[in-house]
Length: 328
Length: 252
Image (cartoon, rainbow over all chains, first blue to last red; front, side, top):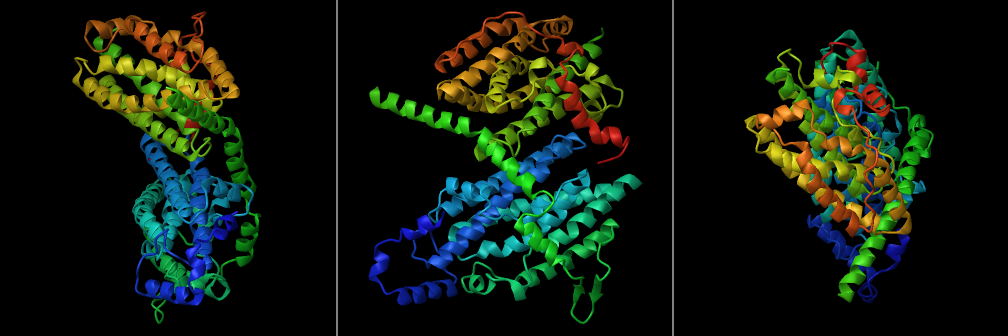
């Protein structure tokens, strides 16, 4: 759908030599200048940003579902309040990010349609189920933890609206990460049943969290250009390693066992070595064959369909009010 | 009944109304008609859970049996829940949630106004704070009553139907019983009977503006405040209390 937006190039663009513009554009990026919505930008840059920011927005929105599962079942009122606030933050992130995408010439309706038709992707992690309360802890600790690793560099992304949105998103995410860790801590210091719940959540969420950083650098098809445009600042594997290095001691602190027999500190590298990711699983989930892909999209679709009459009514009412104002 | 048991009872009613409605609104998260509305629902749910915590913690202290907010919320069965029937009614479609919200909050705003003048300073302080939240909710909810009532034929029909269906739960809000009379005598809270004319006026004005018909006061359902609930509450509690029931005495 966004090609529609991309086709509407400003007339001025045609008057200037494309190559010269590209050189000037790259020079601005290299000088760490921010690119703003009205500035000229290459189609590829625009397209990459639309893809990336909207995927990010969709992930926030779909991500509300697995966590939303536990709002009604949170074990204490304090935990319920924290979870509600967290999920509300995610809706807020979705909103800023949709707005940031709109500055690139694509509407929220178009983006929603892309999500619902399966044309746009969202983070595969949300296609895994939340089976116990510990999953809410594991999501905060690991999924938000991994998201922060990915997102902190985006605060310095070359595209102004995205970079600014990410500053706020990151602050809230790091709060969520600490809350998730706190849930895990409480469980790991609790009864045997609670520890079992926590360990099971770690077993199920660890590998999918590592997959959140995307394919290995060798196979990542978007990386090089995104690096040159400063949309991306670190490679997938660098960020994944950083995440592993930070998270392993946290798991030790919790007294939980990482579900990876190859995990070991490598003195000479100064990093943890870890086992091979099951990329087959990653690509299957990406294709739609994860445990909850169908449920997630069906839930968004039914929210959209069930709400159609409400949105239509709101528009009709606004039009009536406008006519009344004009008539008055 | 002693002052202590009356006050405990009174606080449970306030706390349970907030808790049950907060729980209902929480069910909307990630299923709303529009992202903005999902945020609004989560926000309202969060406000209500916060209110429930304030009222139930206080109730636990008054009771003096070492029950905290969570023991009161998660370890009582429906017979001991003192909320009105209106707040436990299922969400239905978005319009039904709006209608339920509007009927209840139109009452709650006036109740809070009275409570903010309570001789019990703790209640007065809570009510003062909560009034601000409810004023904002009500502005939002009233606007939706107008949009849906005066929107399309379909939305008009749907929300009219929701008001018709829910109207029978409005009577319970204004019945004064022994506990209410005790509260009035001690300056703790308002007499609910005296709130009904303002409520009727407030609700009536919005319904008229929304081109909706105010349902007739016919037979009114009730009993929630005495632990006689609709079938819906049991499921709500089963869902809400599951972890505390399945893992007794665990800390979360």
